[in-house]
Image (cartoon, rainbow, N blue to C red; front, side, top):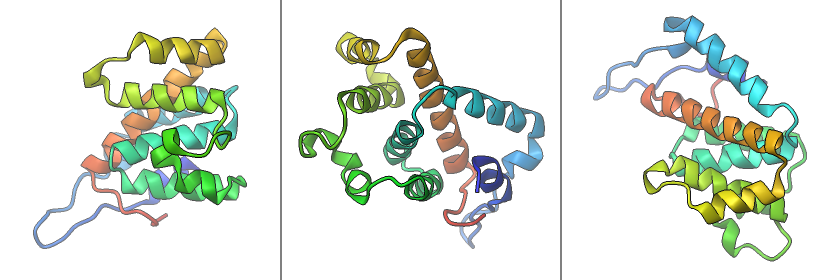
Length: 164
């Protein structure tokens, strides 16, 4: 299932203590379609495995259960190894070679951009710039920005993991 199908068909959590939240796709269709287009454009030219790792790491940092569920499933369908998924939250402590230098640079940039309040250190940006050509780096940045937006929408609207 694509991000479009997952996002458009998922429901929001509603409990006795929390009223239902807005269905973003239905209530802001033009903005939703624009975000889908940005999402598709951001992925162009990037390794699909790297895309999923970045999206999972951002979703972990943003406590987005909906996106985490979706992207872990997508990564598994694409053949990602379980060990890499299990250790992604502690990738710096993972055994040497589990994540490539390029993946590590992307994960460090993902963390810095996701936690933007701390800024993006020159060292982190420089490491990413060494691993990615300028166009690819811009695509990576677009991907990080997009998943952070999806995370914020899903968390704010209380999207339900596993539905859709």
